[in-house]
Image (cartoon, rainbow, N blue to C red; front, side, top):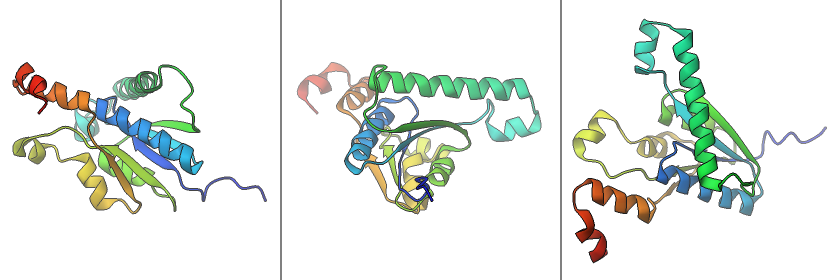
Length: 174
């Protein structure tokens, strides 16, 4: 009987297109090369108005448009991460409808899987209360190891600019 690879672990990586998720994608590919396993890049999406809004007013064209937009975002993220070149590892991609944390945990369900995630943005208490951290959810609920990749320096610099600290903080090196 031929080995289908179903029992082989994978590197499952959450992709959103953010700088943090692109850093996680690069780390996932590096880990996959080292372990000679497949990378499963997963972009999670929900219909416009979230799942609850969609259930109240089912509209297949809206659902199709949401799925198409998610696939386009995933392609764009891969193009940005690898400049249109081969990633250097076996790479499979999926745009999956569902809440990001729950869907990523469900996707990393094989023995030997490792879930790789970007650390995300720094957020205040209110923001965390309204929209909990996907990374924290996955760390708490995943049955496999979870590797969180720190925010890249460029992302930290951009966040400093958004907070209004401007160039002073960047020049001072904080």
